[in-house]
Length: 258
Image 1 (spheres, rainbow, N blue to C red):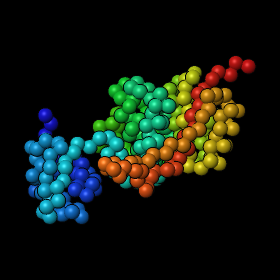
Image 2 (cartoon, helix red, strand yellow; image 1 turned 180 degrees about the vertical axis):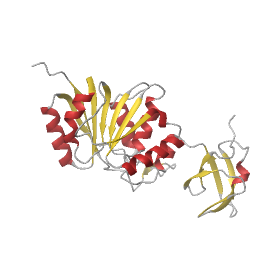
Image 3 (spheres, one colour; image 1 turned 90 degrees about the vertical axis):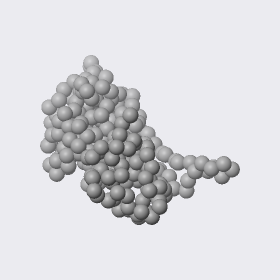
Image 4 (cartoon, rainbow, N blue to C red; image 1 turned 60 degrees about the vertical axis):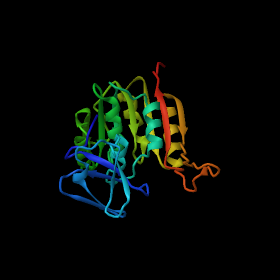
């Protein structure tokens, strides 16, 4: 039975279903639109407990998942959304022990999810051309005790990738087709290429280049997510849905034996 201790982070879900990530500090109060709660009241209580704000609003204190953490990262760049993250992990064959090259560290959302899957024996090699993004990712990974599974690298994968025989090569960059030669060189035989792009023009250029550079099993998908409003006699889709976020292109490296 796990209890909440000082220094822990909890996910508050308020009566109006708003969510807040809060670090528990004795003697401090957390203020939100539905009042405030005294964080000291949480000490020693179990995750899933309920507390009342000063306005009488009931809040639930939950243990955050890794997805809760990454969705609360500062968005210094566009992030990859949960509906796309799961597909990338599965189609990329990412599992414990995998070696993965990622390019376009950005806010570090995908980097964090990849690290959590390759642990405890795998490694993520995450490249970015912006040192500021790498430093931000370093801090976030360290907070979640995942930094040991990631090597953050300042560089451009269009020019060179030091790693060889990697299992997956995942791109979230503006011109992914320019890094396909590097991907082919870095991947093991049969290794998996994944590219995330917001526009169809990027996809077309990427797919055409994949065909020229020795990749097969090429596929591009768009994943849509529609939440349901569930109430007896009134169940229907919600009016707002997570529609287009990106196109995901995948391919496998094959040997060029000509």
